[in-house]
Length: 243
Image (cartoon, rainbow, N blue to C red; front, top):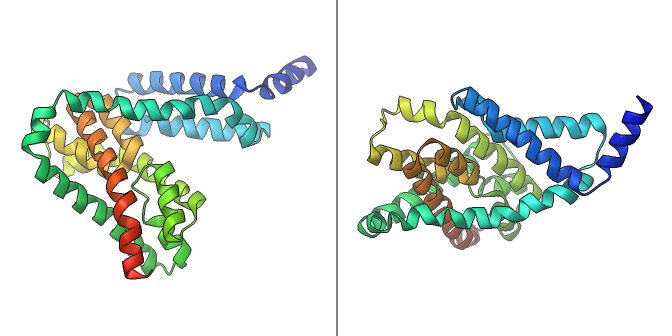
């Protein structure tokens, strides 16, 4: 046992610890997800976060030590998001035919996501800084942090709200879309994907891509449009409202 503890302390202090732990946990979570036939409760992102967070707390390893290795995966998030453009390129003709509907849907969806979050926070009597941190919750976390800082919110709190928003969307999407009467035709897969990407950013887009290629393509499109629209419009709107 002393040898094992010494080995663990040695490995935990190395930068590759965070990278190795993240990859191993995610591969195991993905395997369990496939065995569960992609059941919503088995979402690999959710279980990876829970397992890694529990392990860090249990072992006493601080986040900075973990992230020293995990930052390599964090760096790959940029290329991964750019790669979502390939499925969109394959559907370029569809996008050109329906661009006006897509832009309108993105504007309405993003507005509803922000207004509903801020409105609920107002009903609960949350402080102004928390309300402003809630507004960009449906935008991917790094952009949400930048928007929150720009409009007077708390960047760390914005990231805290963004991550569970994505996870909850990925967990509940199938059930919600079924209750809404959406089927599995090609057009309905596009609708599912666009709605999921609008409400649940990158985590939702990743889930949509696992389920159906068209859903993943339109989820990626919605993710990108929300990033652009929110980054440009949200600071202007909040400045105009003087919140």
